[in-house]
Amino acid sequence: MSGADSGAAGKVTATAHGPWPGTDPLEAARIIRGELGGPHLPFLAELPARGVGSDALGRTAALLEGLAVDVQPHGWRLVDRPGQDARRARSALATDINVLADVAGTETVSADALKIQLRGPLSLAAGLHLHSGERALLDHGARRDLAESLAAGVGAHLRAVAAAVPGARLVVQLEEPDAAAVLAGTIPTASGYRTLRAVAGSEVTGSWRLVVDALHAAGADEVVIAVPEVEAPLERILAAGADGIAVPLRALTSRQWELLAGAVESGRKIWAGVLPVEDPAAEPPPARTLAEALWRPWRQLGLPASSLGAVRLTPAGGLAGHSPTSATRVLARLTHAADALNQIALG
Image (tube, rainbow, N blue to C red; front, side, top):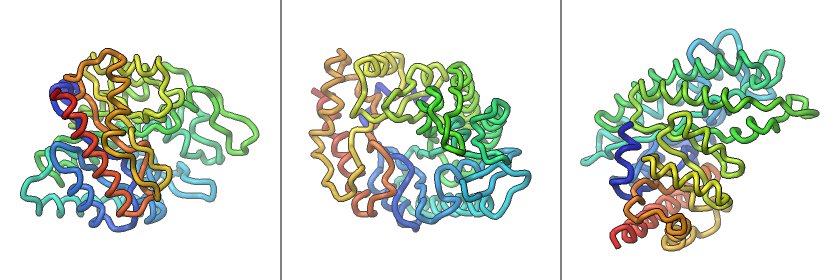
């Protein structure tokens, strides 16, 4: 896995999760690529403010191979044939990729990598509904079909993105916001009166491995699975063959930090959510404060400064609730924090 193998030898870099404010993909692409120039990692923005089909769930569901979706009052639903909502999602994604190609084509020096975001198979199953109105997560066969359909559908998407940024390495962030709840059995049923049975850990690992392997086979240089910090299933992410873990730092336990240290020592990437973004009006913490939030536990775990190249700094969440100005400020603060950590690594 070239992304994992090369991480510890490089520099601390910055990126962000996919959600971005506004409705203009051209403005988003210019800001993101302007702020996250080399060695940092620009990304293809998600613009949920555009409405149905530009949300994270619908965007990924539109890529499914052999399965169709539409929107009902309770949310996205699996259906027999694609409808207007799925076409809208595919059209918005195609527009975003075309805009990316235009922006990248005007750059004197283009970034050597690009990140795309996909909703992972667990959160797809938790978010999509069956004909009955119940969540697909309820049905073992539906969960299996979704994982297989996602694995089959990612190749065409990666090829389209690769054509937009020729020569750039592709990095994929699999977003699994519902992973812990799926494993714990706390996802509510459609009625809300009970919860769905927990999914076996072995099935979770297998679903992730299926999609991770498909992404690597389709040309992804690096695949990272992103989860919230509470009850984050770090061991299962590593067992699934992911090149790295993306997780906020604010509430990690000592045990979780130890697992992250082991991941770094085995050549995996850590995407560290160091910057809180719940309050768009708040001034981001100073770069040195963000750097210390990572460096302090790093040092306590006995990890050497020379291994900081395994780290990418991110916000603790998406930036769709911010203004473009505020979101831009977040990216700038992250790159400055990465510079601070690189100074520490240099001694």
